[in-house]
Amino acid sequence: MKADGLMLAPHELIHVIAFRLIKKRYEYHFGDARVGIVDPLTRPERLFTLALPLITWGAMTLISYTILAVATVFWLRQNPSVATPPLWYLVIGAWCFIPLFYMLTCWADFWQIVWLLTHKETNQPDHYRPQQSPQR
Image (cartoon, rainbow, N blue to C red; front, side, top):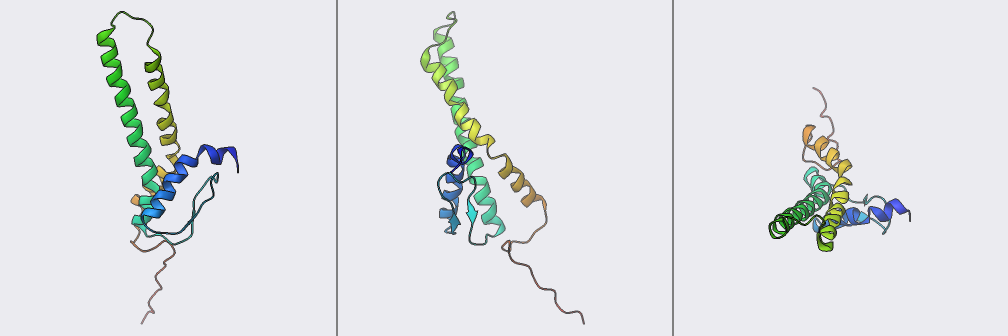
């Protein structure tokens, strides 16, 4: 178990949830840096397993910064002349960096999604290679 695997555990656990939702087998031990694919995946299944962490952390980041913006507006309306913010405001601000950090861990997944969407591939599993029909 490595430190980088533990840092990525929340991200990888969302991949595990995606595999469980589509009922595909996977290989993962807590602290691993990646989730291993045991069963072959179709292209839509692969897109789903890659996109779920990005969607989850993106939504949590958006919600966190929305809460921070609303808290800022309300706090500034009530205390327009106070120079130092209260502790709860600083805690909310610090909390916003957690989902942002994990959203940034989805960078490689994002580029895999882009690659899958831009390349003309069939809806067949990744391991499927159609055989050439004999020429007549």
